[in-house]
Length: 122
Length: 285
Image: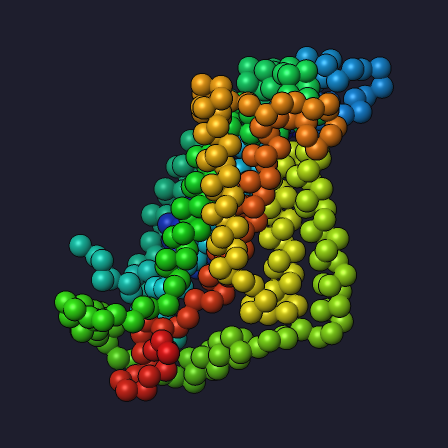
């Protein structure tokens, strides 16, 4: 039942969202954002799954099949695998940007508490 | 220790999260399941990957072929993120102060950040920071020898993933392998083994390579990102046309980009706020 994966991804996302909404520690907020991001990987890979499918690799197909036949057969969705792949790399880079900001905030204000960083409050 | 912050709003957060969870669950329960047909784009990629591109990996055909223009954009998103990290973490520059901005900045900073005493924890953190920056060989000979042995093998594995195109995504996972190898080298030999300037050059060379590969499509085939490289037989390093050079450039871009971001974070100096008036610690040397 792939629905279990969907709901697990939703639960992970909501756990990250709850962390971002209720925590004021900047590192924990970044961890919450990373959790939300990770849940999308699980969701995309789960969307890509097809019951009884093989990996979308046209090398050494199952016995009795030609590589061309796989194109019309039962394989996991390669488009969503591609989305997941690029999302991971971009996610790492974006997390690095968040952490850089957190490091600078910590150095400048000597706190990681978002409520105590008030210089830009309007 | 600061007192417990009263503004965490746990009930509001729980209410909003619960509401969003309900929406998400309703949407996902109605989403396509494991018996849904593949999308048109996936079917197209599976159909053209081997006969047209000579690629046994449809994911590579999607990353660098069908969605090549999207990958082009994502690459520069990665580059922008790396540049942002470098700018955010670079040490404060010494200024000649023709407009008095140094003094103005110092005054503003003093208002925003009133002097706070340096406690024992902060002093210990500063000592650890200096020790880490001064450390040349932080690991034992056993670890260093192990990294010397394993590092080249893993690096060769990364290059193999790119060259033969067997890995879904080619340059993306191979770049992550390269970054992993270099992080092992960092753990074993310290940060000074990195050559930041060379990494920056490699990163920009990767980005330039991608621009050239995409741009040549416009010159030779009248479309940005068009496949202009002749196709060799499948299961060879030259199969896949434009996919392979694009993948190699992405390898350089991803690997060096991740390394630069990590290196910048590791080297982020504590140099924006002096510990106390006149102490000078943390002020750039």
